[in-house]
Amino acid sequence: MAESLVMEDRLTHRIDHSPLFSHDGIHDSQTHLAAASFFYEQLRREIALSQRSSIHFSVIKIIFSRLSENGIRPEIGAEDILHFSYELQTLTRSEDCIGRLGINECVILISDGHSAAERLITRLLHAQSLSVNKTLQISISMVTSVSGESGLALMNRLDREPLSTH
Image 1 (cartoon, rainbow, N blue to C red):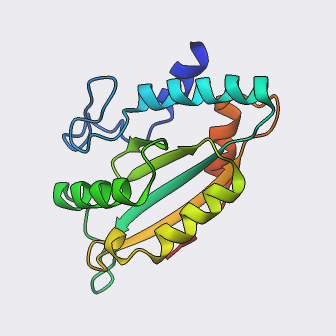
Image 2: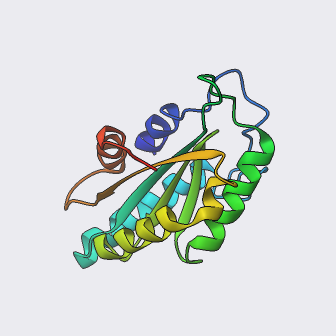
């Protein structure tokens, strides 16, 4: 439980309680993706399952931002967030947990491991709809679980992983 609180403190949305980010504890109220607290609970469960079964899982981080217009990067708006979230849900399987961990940050928990995560990344990178008519820049990184690794360690490793930008 203490680890869950530490993980929630690292969220990128904590600036002045943004109206673009609120939740009921299970779903993000704007996008209906998993809320941070629910995502971290799913991560904890996936770690426990992985330790019992010795099967590794993967986590994909996706950050999206508006493309620069004349050197100025416009802010992400509610319409961008809704469209991106909808398209992300259509491109993923129902058993994959998609958590919204920041205004423009989503993380996908994939229980099938590294190769399934790589296939999903390929699908995401080739999906024109995810870029909202080519107005969003998509950056993706991925890590696969390591035996004995805590959720916090895995998420910290994901944060250190370089983002590939498309």
